[in-house]
Length: 212
Ligand code: SF4
Image (cartoon, rainbow, N blue to C red; front, side, top):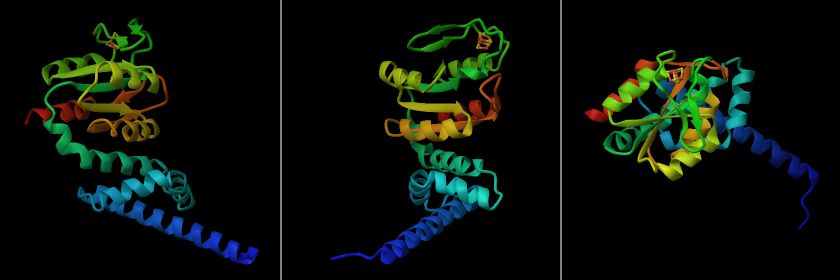
């Protein structure tokens, strides 16, 4: 049977409209969920926004909404879905920090497998996070990139992982790491690959909830 170009064109337009519509619904549900602190249809939101990540960002641009909302929704929905499983694990708990949080004058040596070995000099927030982690039975890794996350998963074999990164990287790494273990994520409050900052209290709070 021959399919005419006209029919193909109509089919294409229908598909584009359907993708935009369904992605828009997922975005709306995600935004409402975050606003109300109650996640509705989490699996639908995660599936649609990961599948149509770029169209979701495009929709935000068209409606002059900040694009980061897509990542924010994915991170918060994933956090909510995995929170109970994350809290239950009592050993081999890891915190993974980006190396850009280090002070520009940091002298820490970089281990080829475990990442930077902080000496707790106190020039950046990593020292405070490590000290809180020791109290709450977490091990902190400060890594220069994604390849180190894979090495840590292989060598340390964590049971749960608390990650810190910028929006886009956190969205990606939470998706890949969540295939192996429960995850939680905290986004940087100042990103930019250099002298970045996280809300330390929020990171510590994520560790504290595991002690309940
Ligand atoms: S606290 Fe650790 S990571 Fe931060 S600058 Fe000092 S040695 Fe480097």
